[in-house]
Image 1 (cartoon, rainbow, N blue to C red):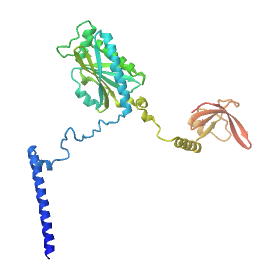
Image 2: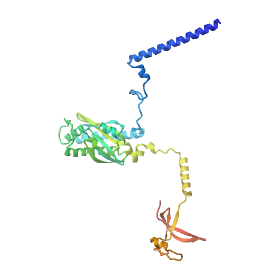
Image 3: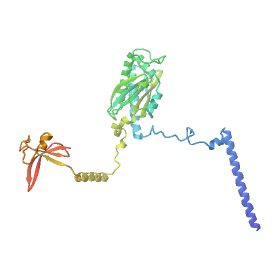
Image 4: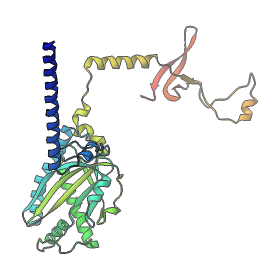
Length: 347
């Protein structure tokens, strides 16, 4: 009995010590929360929609899917780096002053969000980059445009005091400047794809731009252009869907065949067997005439129909309604037959 009482006492003592430790830990936690000026009740009742810290998980945005592969990004980066190098040399020669073009990376954003970020007024141009589909957007910093114009017309490369829209003459000059940027981009992409850039329109008010859906996902290639003491951003925004015709060039992994050669041969064999066993309608036409319904209803046994075709003329063979062959009528044994003499449709 004494031994059992001793064991019971030890268990009670152990439980009491564990309880004291738990209470102490809770008190320490409460003290830490108080030190952070947080309400413990609010922390416990916080919903799942509470804002996360910068280091925490980010909510996935289905309007901006991250579906650019590493190979795709590297190809775009290669073009952008060539653009920066070629642009620096080209503008230095054009303006007779030191010009630097720095590649600042690329990011993905929807067209609607990108339009909200553009200043008003600005210099934004809709352009085409065939064989890429649809329109792309070239944005040049408005202040940078005025510096370009002043230098081209013999003035000092200083920034404009006030922000304003272009005059008609200035609009024409900047249209030529946009063409210069597009030509440099064409040269930069030559090793990867042969582009044929085209200028569509230029707007100072970005709200007047159209041709790209608001929810369209854009790949924005960002540059920083420096002219003496003036610098400004230049951005080329290309819809992700525009790369459809050249996706296999920018992302070769999309074109990699994941099946083995044996699997490919088996697929071809199955397709060939399916084609061979598929029924098709084959009709040999002896001749055709056009007539009205009354004459057709009055036809009787023994009537002779005059065909506009010579007796020895070749007959037309139709497969599924399409003229495919010309042939001569004949006989094989007790069966009528036709000998194919000329193919009309090679499909």
